[in-house]
Length: 283
Image 1: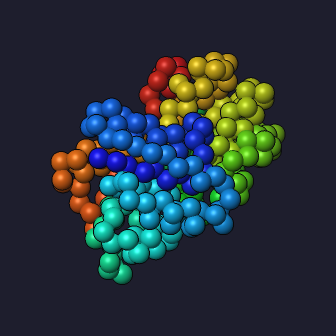
Image 2 (image 1 turned 135 degrees about the vertical axis):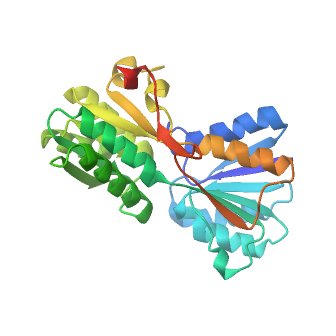
Protein backbone atom coordinates (compact mmCIF):
# COMPACT_ATOMS: atom_id res chain seq x y z
CA UNK A 1 0.00 0.00 0.00
CA UNK A 2 1.34 3.41 -1.01
CA UNK A 3 0.40 6.73 0.54
CA UNK A 4 1.10 10.34 -0.47
CA UNK A 5 1.14 12.89 2.34
CA UNK A 6 0.64 16.32 0.80
CA UNK A 7 1.75 19.00 3.26
CA UNK A 8 0.57 22.57 2.64
CA UNK A 9 3.69 23.99 4.22
CA UNK A 10 6.79 22.22 5.45
CA UNK A 11 7.75 19.83 8.19
CA UNK A 12 9.54 21.21 11.22
CA UNK A 13 6.71 23.15 12.89
CA UNK A 14 7.01 20.85 15.94
CA UNK A 15 3.23 20.94 16.04
CA UNK A 16 0.37 20.21 13.63
CA UNK A 17 2.22 19.13 10.49
CA UNK A 18 4.84 17.17 12.38
CA UNK A 19 2.10 15.38 14.30
CA UNK A 20 0.51 14.26 11.03
CA UNK A 21 3.86 13.10 9.67
CA UNK A 22 4.55 11.20 12.89
CA UNK A 23 1.28 9.28 12.68
CA UNK A 24 1.93 8.30 9.07
CA UNK A 25 5.48 7.23 9.92
CA UNK A 26 4.17 4.99 12.71
CA UNK A 27 1.65 3.49 10.29
CA UNK A 28 4.47 2.84 7.82
CA UNK A 29 6.33 0.83 10.43
CA UNK A 30 3.36 -1.13 11.77
CA UNK A 31 1.25 -1.68 8.66
CA UNK A 32 3.90 -2.03 5.96
CA UNK A 33 2.82 1.18 4.25
CA UNK A 34 5.12 3.05 1.88
CA UNK A 35 4.65 6.81 2.28
CA UNK A 36 5.84 9.68 0.10
CA UNK A 37 5.81 13.22 1.49
CA UNK A 38 5.27 16.27 -0.71
CA UNK A 39 6.04 19.59 0.98
CA UNK A 40 4.18 22.25 -0.99
CA UNK A 41 5.70 25.22 0.84
CA UNK A 42 3.89 28.38 1.89
CA UNK A 43 3.08 29.92 -1.49
CA UNK A 44 -0.66 29.28 -1.36
CA UNK A 45 -1.13 30.12 -5.04
CA UNK A 46 0.86 27.02 -6.00
CA UNK A 47 -0.98 24.52 -3.82
CA UNK A 48 -3.75 23.77 -6.31
CA UNK A 49 -1.40 22.90 -9.16
CA UNK A 50 0.85 20.85 -6.92
CA UNK A 51 -2.09 18.93 -5.46
CA UNK A 52 -3.47 18.22 -8.92
CA UNK A 53 -0.09 16.88 -10.03
CA UNK A 54 0.06 14.64 -6.97
CA UNK A 55 -3.51 13.38 -7.43
CA UNK A 56 -2.85 12.55 -11.08
CA UNK A 57 -0.03 10.16 -10.19
CA UNK A 58 -0.64 6.45 -10.59
CA UNK A 59 1.73 5.22 -7.88
CA UNK A 60 -0.43 5.58 -4.76
CA UNK A 61 -3.51 4.14 -3.08
CA UNK A 62 -4.54 7.06 -0.88
CA UNK A 63 -3.57 10.74 -0.76
CA UNK A 64 -3.65 12.50 2.61
CA UNK A 65 -3.76 16.24 3.25
CA UNK A 66 -5.05 18.46 6.01
CA UNK A 67 -6.54 21.73 7.28
CA UNK A 68 -9.38 23.96 6.14
CA UNK A 69 -6.95 25.72 3.79
CA UNK A 70 -6.89 22.55 1.66
CA UNK A 71 -10.59 21.69 1.81
CA UNK A 72 -11.77 23.24 -1.45
CA UNK A 73 -8.67 22.14 -3.36
CA UNK A 74 -9.05 18.58 -2.11
CA UNK A 75 -12.76 18.58 -2.96
CA UNK A 76 -11.94 19.58 -6.53
CA UNK A 77 -9.33 16.89 -7.15
CA UNK A 78 -11.49 14.26 -5.45
CA UNK A 79 -14.25 14.97 -7.97
CA UNK A 80 -11.76 14.92 -10.84
CA UNK A 81 -10.32 11.57 -9.71
CA UNK A 82 -13.26 9.46 -8.49
CA UNK A 83 -11.17 6.30 -8.82
CA UNK A 84 -8.67 7.59 -6.22
CA UNK A 85 -8.96 7.61 -2.44
CA UNK A 86 -8.39 10.66 -0.24
CA UNK A 87 -8.14 11.47 3.46
CA UNK A 88 -8.40 15.02 4.79
CA UNK A 89 -7.67 15.78 8.42
CA UNK A 90 -8.78 18.79 10.48
CA UNK A 91 -11.39 19.65 7.87
CA UNK A 92 -14.16 18.04 5.86
CA UNK A 93 -15.55 18.18 2.36
CA UNK A 94 -19.25 19.01 2.06
CA UNK A 95 -20.84 15.59 1.74
CA UNK A 96 -24.27 17.15 1.23
CA UNK A 97 -23.11 18.11 -2.27
CA UNK A 98 -22.68 14.44 -3.17
CA UNK A 99 -19.81 12.94 -5.13
CA UNK A 100 -17.33 12.45 -2.30
CA UNK A 101 -17.66 8.71 -1.75
CA UNK A 102 -13.86 8.54 -2.17
CA UNK A 103 -13.05 10.95 0.68
CA UNK A 104 -12.74 10.25 4.40
CA UNK A 105 -12.67 13.34 6.64
CA UNK A 106 -11.57 13.53 10.27
CA UNK A 107 -12.16 16.60 12.42
CA UNK A 108 -11.25 17.48 15.98
CA UNK A 109 -13.24 19.30 18.63
CA UNK A 110 -10.50 21.84 19.20
CA UNK A 111 -12.90 23.96 21.24
CA UNK A 112 -12.98 21.18 23.85
CA UNK A 113 -9.20 20.98 24.04
CA UNK A 114 -8.88 24.77 24.10
CA UNK A 115 -11.43 24.88 26.93
CA UNK A 116 -9.16 22.61 28.99
CA UNK A 117 -6.18 24.84 28.14
CA UNK A 118 -8.20 27.85 29.28
CA UNK A 119 -9.13 26.20 32.57
CA UNK A 120 -5.47 25.40 33.15
CA UNK A 121 -4.33 28.93 32.25
CA UNK A 122 -7.05 30.45 34.41
CA UNK A 123 -5.87 28.43 37.39
CA UNK A 124 -2.17 29.07 36.78
CA UNK A 125 -2.12 32.78 35.95
CA UNK A 126 -0.79 35.04 38.67
CA UNK A 127 -1.46 38.34 36.89
CA UNK A 128 -5.07 37.58 35.97
CA UNK A 129 -4.28 38.24 32.29
CA UNK A 130 -3.63 35.56 29.69
CA UNK A 131 -3.23 35.59 25.92
CA UNK A 132 -3.72 33.52 22.80
CA UNK A 133 -1.92 33.88 19.46
CA UNK A 134 -3.70 32.57 16.36
CA UNK A 135 -2.02 31.98 13.04
CA UNK A 136 -5.03 33.38 11.19
CA UNK A 137 -8.35 35.04 11.95
CA UNK A 138 -10.39 32.06 10.77
CA UNK A 139 -13.32 29.92 11.89
CA UNK A 140 -11.05 27.13 13.11
CA UNK A 141 -8.72 29.42 15.06
CA UNK A 142 -11.63 31.33 16.58
CA UNK A 143 -12.99 27.99 17.77
CA UNK A 144 -9.79 27.76 19.83
CA UNK A 145 -10.19 31.35 21.04
CA UNK A 146 -13.78 30.87 22.21
CA UNK A 147 -13.01 27.60 23.98
CA UNK A 148 -9.92 29.06 25.65
CA UNK A 149 -11.81 32.12 26.87
CA UNK A 150 -14.75 30.07 28.16
CA UNK A 151 -12.45 27.67 29.99
CA UNK A 152 -10.50 30.45 31.68
CA UNK A 153 -13.67 32.33 32.67
CA UNK A 154 -15.17 29.16 34.13
CA UNK A 155 -12.54 29.15 36.89
CA UNK A 156 -11.69 32.86 36.98
CA UNK A 157 -14.62 35.00 35.79
CA UNK A 158 -12.64 38.26 35.94
CA UNK A 159 -9.75 36.98 33.81
CA UNK A 160 -8.56 39.20 30.93
CA UNK A 161 -7.91 37.32 27.67
CA UNK A 162 -5.78 39.07 25.05
CA UNK A 163 -6.07 37.87 21.44
CA UNK A 164 -3.65 38.42 18.55
CA UNK A 165 -3.62 37.03 15.00
CA UNK A 166 -0.31 36.70 13.17
CA UNK A 167 -1.87 36.12 9.72
CA UNK A 168 1.07 33.86 8.91
CA UNK A 169 1.99 30.31 9.85
CA UNK A 170 5.74 30.33 9.25
CA UNK A 171 7.18 33.49 10.83
CA UNK A 172 8.54 32.81 14.34
CA UNK A 173 9.89 36.37 14.58
CA UNK A 174 6.38 37.78 14.18
CA UNK A 175 5.11 35.29 16.72
CA UNK A 176 7.77 36.44 19.17
CA UNK A 177 6.89 40.11 18.61
CA UNK A 178 3.15 39.58 19.12
CA UNK A 179 3.68 37.43 22.20
CA UNK A 180 6.03 40.05 23.62
CA UNK A 181 3.26 42.65 23.18
CA UNK A 182 0.90 40.51 25.23
CA UNK A 183 3.48 39.83 27.92
CA UNK A 184 4.29 43.55 28.08
CA UNK A 185 0.56 44.25 28.45
CA UNK A 186 0.33 42.04 31.52
CA UNK A 187 -0.26 38.51 30.26
CA UNK A 188 1.83 35.89 32.02
CA UNK A 189 0.62 32.91 29.95
CA UNK A 190 0.17 32.86 26.15
CA UNK A 191 -1.41 29.94 24.28
CA UNK A 192 -0.02 29.59 20.76
CA UNK A 193 -2.15 28.19 17.93
CA UNK A 194 -0.03 29.51 15.08
CA UNK A 195 2.06 26.66 13.69
CA UNK A 196 5.69 27.53 13.10
CA UNK A 197 4.92 31.19 13.87
CA UNK A 198 4.01 30.06 17.36
CA UNK A 199 7.54 28.88 18.06
CA UNK A 200 8.33 32.55 18.61
CA UNK A 201 5.92 32.57 21.57
CA UNK A 202 8.19 30.17 23.42
CA UNK A 203 11.19 32.36 22.75
CA UNK A 204 9.29 35.39 24.07
CA UNK A 205 8.21 33.46 27.15
CA UNK A 206 11.79 32.45 27.82
CA UNK A 207 13.23 35.94 27.41
CA UNK A 208 10.52 37.59 29.52
CA UNK A 209 10.34 34.97 32.25
CA UNK A 210 6.70 34.17 31.50
CA UNK A 211 4.86 30.98 30.51
CA UNK A 212 3.32 29.55 27.37
CA UNK A 213 1.03 26.75 26.24
CA UNK A 214 1.77 24.79 23.08
CA UNK A 215 -0.55 23.11 20.61
CA UNK A 216 -1.08 19.92 18.59
CA UNK A 217 2.05 18.10 19.84
CA UNK A 218 3.71 17.90 23.26
CA UNK A 219 5.94 20.83 22.38
CA UNK A 220 7.81 20.92 25.69
CA UNK A 221 9.06 17.36 25.23
CA UNK A 222 10.08 18.12 21.65
CA UNK A 223 11.87 21.38 22.48
CA UNK A 224 13.64 20.05 25.56
CA UNK A 225 15.88 17.98 23.28
CA UNK A 226 17.49 21.14 21.89
CA UNK A 227 16.62 23.89 24.38
CA UNK A 228 15.71 22.57 27.85
CA UNK A 229 15.56 26.07 29.34
CA UNK A 230 12.92 27.11 26.82
CA UNK A 231 10.98 23.90 27.41
CA UNK A 232 10.72 24.86 31.08
CA UNK A 233 8.56 27.85 30.05
CA UNK A 234 5.90 25.62 28.41
CA UNK A 235 3.29 24.64 30.99
CA UNK A 236 1.49 22.12 28.79
CA UNK A 237 0.25 21.71 25.21
CA UNK A 238 -3.26 21.30 23.90
CA UNK A 239 -2.95 18.06 22.04
CA UNK A 240 -4.84 17.73 18.79
CA UNK A 241 -3.98 14.08 18.26
CA UNK A 242 -3.59 14.20 14.49
CA UNK A 243 -0.94 11.48 14.69
CA UNK A 244 -3.22 9.00 16.46
CA UNK A 245 -6.18 9.77 14.18
CA UNK A 246 -4.17 9.19 10.99
CA UNK A 247 -2.57 6.05 12.41
CA UNK A 248 -6.07 4.78 13.21
CA UNK A 249 -7.41 5.76 9.77
CA UNK A 250 -4.61 3.99 7.92
CA UNK A 251 -5.04 0.90 10.07
CA UNK A 252 -8.73 0.82 9.17
CA UNK A 253 -7.86 1.38 5.51
CA UNK A 254 -5.52 -1.61 5.51
CA UNK A 255 -8.32 -3.71 7.00
CA UNK A 256 -10.78 -2.40 4.39
CA UNK A 257 -12.91 -0.74 7.07
CA UNK A 258 -12.22 3.00 6.68
CA UNK A 259 -15.62 4.67 6.13
CA UNK A 260 -15.02 6.68 2.97
CA UNK A 261 -17.84 9.06 2.15
CA UNK A 262 -18.16 10.17 5.77
CA UNK A 263 -16.67 12.56 8.31
CA UNK A 264 -15.77 11.66 11.89
CA UNK A 265 -15.29 14.19 14.69
CA UNK A 266 -13.02 13.35 17.62
CA UNK A 267 -13.17 15.18 20.95
CA UNK A 268 -11.94 14.64 24.49
CA UNK A 269 -14.06 11.53 24.96
CA UNK A 270 -12.73 9.92 21.77
CA UNK A 271 -9.12 10.83 22.54
CA UNK A 272 -8.97 13.35 19.71
CA UNK A 273 -7.93 16.28 21.91
CA UNK A 274 -6.58 16.80 25.42
CA UNK A 275 -3.73 18.30 27.42
CA UNK A 276 -0.15 17.04 27.53
CA UNK A 277 0.49 15.66 31.01
CA UNK A 278 4.27 15.68 31.29
CA UNK A 279 6.51 16.72 34.18
CA UNK A 280 6.08 20.41 33.29
CA UNK A 281 2.33 20.02 33.66
CA UNK A 282 2.64 18.12 36.93
CA UNK A 283 5.02 20.70 38.41
